Length: 209
Length: 209
DNA sequence: AATAAATGTATACACTGTCCACAATGACAC
DNA sequence: GTGTCATTGTGGACAGTGTATACATTTATT
Image (cartoon, rainbow over all chains, first blue to last red; front, side, top):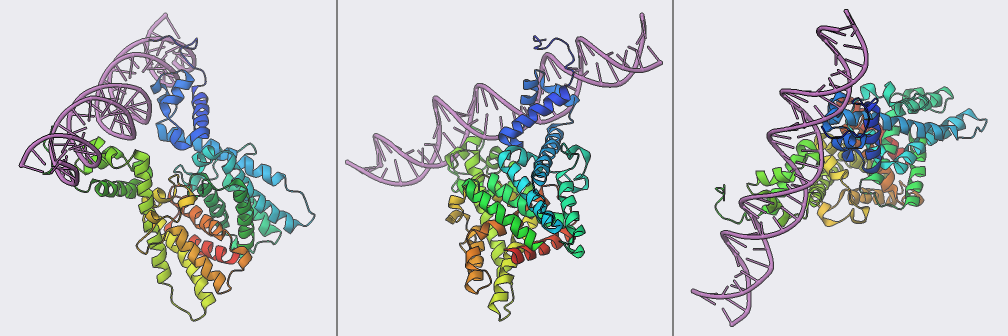
């Protein structure tokens, strides 16, 4: 047995420690940069110790993905909260829709690694709203978007018959720009051009939904 | 030296053979499934032979990406060609815009592995129109989309001031749906729901651009 | 205090991308 | 033709990865 860098045989909170290490790797290099062995190394533990807390690398990635989705939700809710009240509920609702899209894109640009880890790791919509993907406010990204769309219908800014699955349309648009800008063909697009495209994109969605 | 499975020491067209093998792997499992050694194995050649034709795995992936983009362009042009002429050039141009989006999405659903290889491998927009990404008709996906947008302006279906970088908006929307549906959170969405969302999405773009 | 469950370690395997030195081949000058 | 040389292939090695299997240590439970 090699000298332990900690005192006790047990680590104490290895699950969380591994997850944090994995998140840090994802932040730096996206999902592909999440390497199980490196996580255990950073935690000062043997490689196989990870298997007591994650079934395999894929499971670890899913945990990273869920956590990153929570952060994305935070970014979106932060943007919503920053929308000034205008008095007109229709205007407010529409501004919130814009905000949710811009918040999503802000997260993509500020944390490209985590963004990719969050949204391009295989997972099912069936649990898109599930708890572990929630941010500080307890809502998942899908949930946050859904709330805003509901509000649009309530105030009459979106006809009821267009509400169904409107998430898909709105989400697709901003997600696409995010992906193209981060590691797709638009990777090296100057950032003011991205900002400009972001604004026009959310306008397009608000107008076209 | 182990017995060669071919007659001559030289292979003849190893570059193309490796590329084909890599494309097949990408078709089956996306960019991550492209493994250099496996390609050489399928070509009946030693692992290092690949390095005479590709600088490294990344270069191989870029070649796969370019080829896959050509196929996407083909899918888009096929969809455009299938649009019936209505006599009204404005209607035709708009239908072509819809077609280009639906062609893109059709490719995503029919060849998810190649789609991801095509559009989620780091590359620059600076050469988005370059030759090697061209399909049978010699146009890249970006080029095909641009052509359709130009036509929209020509026939007066899109105001000039909104033409600039409209590629980004249109592309983002369909690309996002494609990604979400393929390996993102919408992966298991039933296919008729995807088809429905696709239609509504291109409508939204056509209306909102 | 005895035993079982949980958590960490050691060792090993197959597989990957890539480096280096060497071998076979084809093209070309003389 | 024959000799030279760049091109294209091979062989062996290395570090690094995910993961299986067997074992050790600690905590929880009876």
